[in-house]
Image 1 (cartoon, one colour):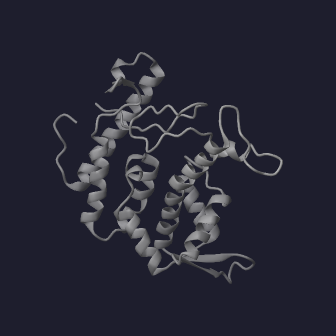
Image 2 (image 1 turned 120 degrees about the vertical axis):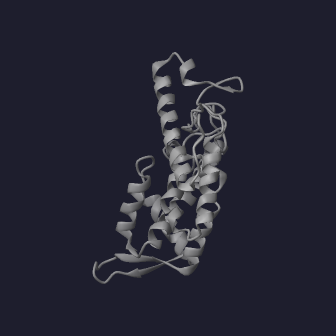
Image 3 (image 1 turned 30 degrees about the vertical axis):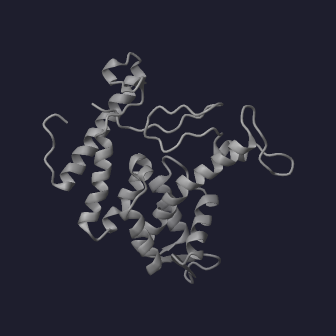
Length: 245
């Protein structure tokens, strides 16, 4: 039985050690948070022990490229359900994704500004709230963009469970059931591939083979989660589950 809870890249001083073969990309870097706190006197990224300035910049670029689209999708998805004041949108996005990565004003509002500049959402003053408060609403171009993103998620948006949950949160907005099912089938195909947190060469290690009780617990929990998700997807697709899932 595959252990399907995916682990992210493990931060290391040297090349990243990846505990599963489905991570989008391994990279030699520090985290964005660490990079932000290591600046020189002029406010530029400073090299850390064992890490170059180039690697810090790579980390920042990778973080923006992978997190930004999901944040934008969450913004577009919530606005597709109706116009919202900025503070209410922030609250909803934080509830959706904040349990894994807190949503800061420094990431949310630049994302809103990007979408507004691209003509995907509109911002107007909220006379009832007063002051600098405003209401956000989706444009037709924004709705088209949101549907395109839901229709064709990137591979890592299928394989990474946190990103996939963002897609899943708004998948019902796709009007065509066949398109919704196509996304679910991609996820199911991924979940059915043999995988583990740990490997013996190229062979995935099963939970029953692991002596460490904490690793075993982690793998058994992931297995149960994977089984439940696969059962739900098959039910949604109207498929009969295999006899030995």
